[in-house]
Length: 235
Image 1 (tube, one colour):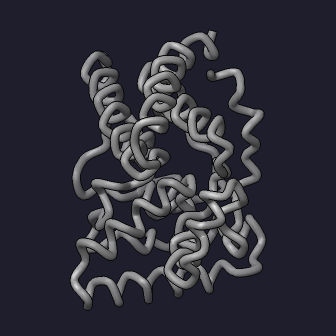
Image 2 (tube, rainbow, N blue to C red; image 1 turned 90 degrees about the vertical axis):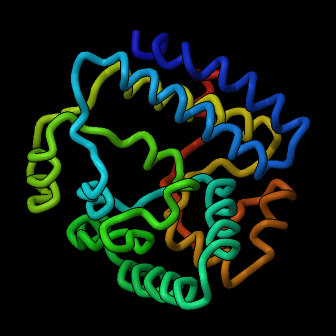
Image 3 (cartoon, rainbow, N blue to C red; image 1 turned 30 degrees about the horizontal axis):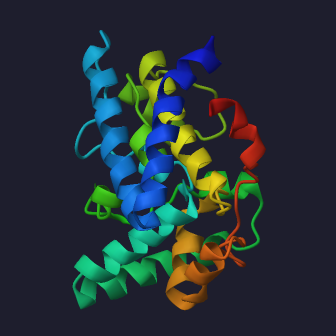
């Protein structure tokens, strides 16, 4: 049943993304995907009888997890930052990202979970890359902010899941459809830790060339172990 609900959104997105990737650049394709994805999410949220607790200024989820992103998403964030950030803001961003990555180098997953440091792209409790934030950030939602706060303060405790099923399946299906369309092009669709991948892109412009040639986009940045085959049922 859950697969069927995901497929409702995965299949149309796969078809649209496949067409985009044949007629547009990869960067243009990801922006077009974001527009469709956000529209699907907005429709699911508005149709839900249960209100979401997420609101501007709430950043619990930005402090709980190491954000992950596809290479195409990392490259769009890199382009956005270098295009729109003023020199001081750009330097500060790169410094925060460098510090964030250094603290996590070589640590265990348990230690990583306990750090609870804000995402380096979070500035004044607001996402500085909001227009190009990766799909995983667009997908996060909750109906109980108190549980989010408790989870932030007590990372190894178990708290009730408070997401909305229809919103969840919409988000996961849509994202899977796009990811599979990118994978069909023979391109890297592993989910990398965003900060490390962004920093590697800053330091090594050959990341884009590696990606376009069908190789793993990043050499130093770690990924979550996502396997393209795992999402094959979604498209």
